[in-house]
Image 1 (tube, rainbow, N blue to C red):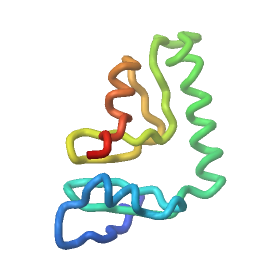
Image 2 (cartoon, rainbow, N blue to C red):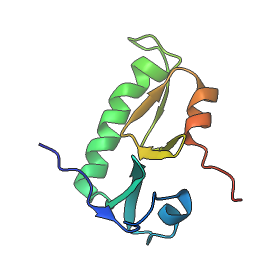
Image 3 (tube, rainbow, N blue to C red):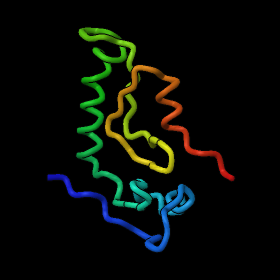
Image 4 (tube, one colour):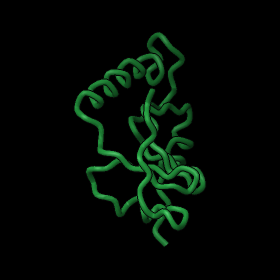
Length: 109
């Protein structure tokens, strides 16, 4: 069973997007229920597996070869929904505008 990402500071308040972007580049982070969680970026084997799955999904879902077509398959996009920030792997969306809306980080205040 996959373990959740370890929680990292701040522990005394809800995490913000600013907290997330301050983390070192070698970490992947998410904000879930106001808590910031981080772990090292995936190993090469994980990246190969993700690219393979994305490759299998491209023809039927993006290009309509043996499938419905019209989907946008994105690998590990940063998705924003309110104060939540998560990474999906892979992420599929039927509507590019919706996919871009979810994956756009908030503008700095």
